[in-house]
Image 1 (cartoon, one colour):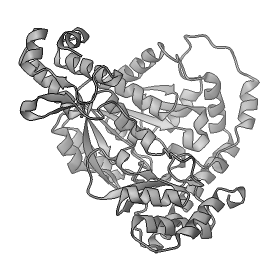
Image 2: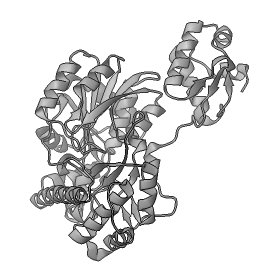
Image 3: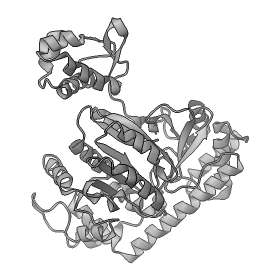
Image 4: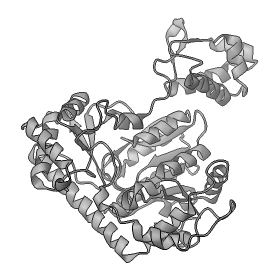
Length: 464
C-alpha cells in the first residue's frame, strides 16, 4: 500500500483515528507482515497534522504489538500482527477430540438440571412479544435483584457472560486506552481487548484475587477499566475474600473514574462466598452473572448490572443487532430458578464439583504436583515445559489447555489449565489421570499407558 492509499484510509486524523485506521488495514490484510510504514514526519506532513500526533498513534500501535520499530531501518507491520484468537488456541486439537477432554470449561452434562418440565410449563403460557418490550422479562428482574450482591442501579439480560463483557468493553474502551486485567486471565478477555486496540495492563493474582500492590502499580498507567473474575477465577480458581475486597477498595479510591467489570461466570456452582466490589462502588461497577455452568450453556442467558448509563448504552446498541435475549428462554430460566427440584439439583452439582475438585487436588498432591485449594472448574497446574506437557498428555488421549493463552505478560513458570467438568469420579481412573499429569508436568513418575487407558475408560458411559 502506497502513501496515498494509506492517507485515504485515514478519515479521522487524531492519534486515535490514525491508530484505528492502521489497525483495520492490518486486520483486513491490506497491510501485511513486514510492510514498511512511512516515517512519522512523512505521514504527518501528508496528513497535515503534527508529528506528535502521529508519534502518539505509533506508540499505541507498538504497545498492542501491531507494529515494530527497527531503528534507522524504519517502522514495520509486526510479524503475525493480525488478530488471532487465544480462545481458539486454548482448546484446539489438530487430530480430533481426545478421549478425555479436560481443556474446556464446560459443565458435566450429568449435573445439569432437566430442562423438560420448565420448557413444558413456559410453552403453555408463552406470549408473542413486540420489538420494543423491556429487555428483561417481568418477574425475572425481580429475582435477579433479590439475589444480587449489592443494590445495583440498572439490570439487563444478554446472550451469555462473554457477550456481556464484550458489549460493556465496547462502551467504555476506545482505541489506545489502557485496561487493567488480572494475570493470568481468561483468554477471551485478552482477545476482546486486543480487537479493540486496547493496551493490557496486567495485575497479578493470588488465591485471594487481584493483588492490591499489583493493582496500585497498574493504576499508575491510568487505565479506563479493570476486568477480573471475583469468584472461581479461570484459570487459577482464586476467589475474593472480605479482607481482599477492603484492600482493593482502598487502592481503587485513588482512581474514581475507573470502570470495574466483574465476571461472576460460575455463580451458582461456586462454593466460595459471593463478594463484589460493587458493594463499595455500585456507581461504577458492572457485575455479570452467568447461568451457563449451572443450568446449561445452550440457554445463552447472562445478567449484567451496573451504572444506568452503561446498561442503557448496551441496550441501545443491541437494538441494532439481536434486539433482546429470547424472552422465552428467560421464562424457562425464571421457572428453573424458582423450582425447588431444580434448585436442589444445582446445589447438588455445586457440592459434587467441590468434592471432585478436592479429590483430584489430593490425587495430584500424592503424585508430587501441588495445587492450592480453590473453587470452580479450572485448575492451574505448574509444568516444567508447557508444550511438552500438552503433547505428552495428548498422546495419552488427554486434552488440557496450554497456559500461554492465559498470560497477559511473559512468565517464568509454565502452566497448563485442567478443568474438572469431564473428570471421572471413580478413584482409580482419577488417580491414573493425576499420575499422567504428573509425568507430563515433569514432577512425578508413573505409567503413561495406564493413564491413557483411564482416559479412554472415562470417556465411556459406565465411567459416569
